[in-house]
Amino acid sequence: MSHVAIAIDGPAAAGKSTVAKIVAKRLGFIYIDTGAMYRAFTWYVLYRGLDPKNEEASCSLIPEVSIDLAEDGKVFVCGHDVTRAIREPNVSSNVSYIASYKAIRLALIDLQRELGEKGNVVMDGRDIGSYVLPRAQVKIFQIASAETRAKRRYLENLEKGIPTSLEDVIEDVKRRDYIDSHRDFDPLMQAEDAIPLDTSDMGIEEVVQAILKIVEDKTGVKACH
Image (tube, rainbow, N blue to C red; front, side, top):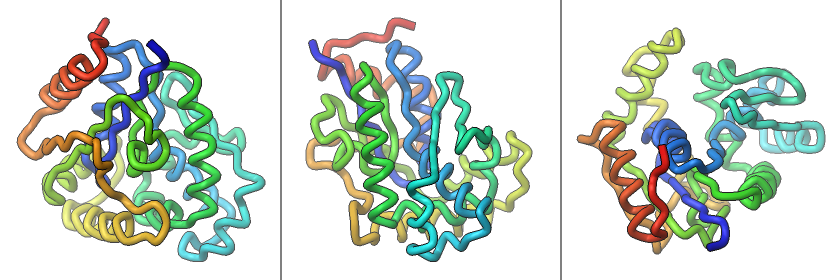
């Protein structure tokens, strides 16, 4: 069989990265966090003192931005370790603006597709099954209510020592949903052949098992860890 690609899409804070990372490890696949790439670019825009809401200024940085995803999960921008910094509230509240700009999306999609050619991959984001890897053998569209997603993100922030209020996170999630689904180019949408998975009442391990079963049913590939 040729390389197997698993695309996990869904709205902000749906738990895609957490689940995708575990699924990749269980299958022995490469994990690619595309959301981290957009966060990394957003961090760089802020680092350069520019306004992420300014499309022209943000896109002008494309030629000078280099983003590297290390196998240990660390994220680097132009040599800076930004693994923790890209999860800070100022990045979270601006990343959907950066992700809405066509030129930036196209630049990062090229990088994502290049990474997707390296072997068996699990890639998560907003547009993996619909645009980045349209031929992925397995496509999951992971959803949950805005309140459930916000509570998960709030608890994640607390664990990481990032100060936020639940109310602010709920507002941020709803705003990002609107921006992601209403952008002109490549909006958040479920691919026609994607399998919807509502995780509102599911724990992490339940979601992982559900996805592993879908993968096995569609490709015959079983978890090895």
